[in-house]
Image (cartoon, rainbow, N blue to C red; front, side):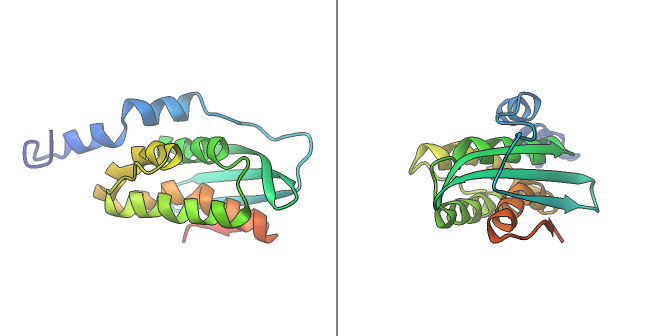
Length: 157
């Protein structure tokens, strides 16, 4: 169902909160503060109440482990969950590129099936219908970039 079929946009809202997205938010991967980590940062969106703490353990230039503590909407929580599942083994540059691609999917609605990580991020393609929600997708990625740059806090604004 689309907005043309549903003047209230109820179909689009249902699409926004897909089963996959809800499952990611309700049973997040790699949740919780680890006992030790090499870098951390907090992403905060004071306008909507989303907050994500990202914790990263490094093995040289590669991420060994990423964990998160996220609160806020299901989109934000799902994004943090996917981030922490996808980035282990990646370099800083690779995570920055993946974060940009996640933002692009959320902004344009165009998914990418070129690899499993991008295919999984395509769950956020429907967000382009709700531009104010793009920040919900990108907050965790911005926090990861900040952590890797040695910045302790970032904002979605």
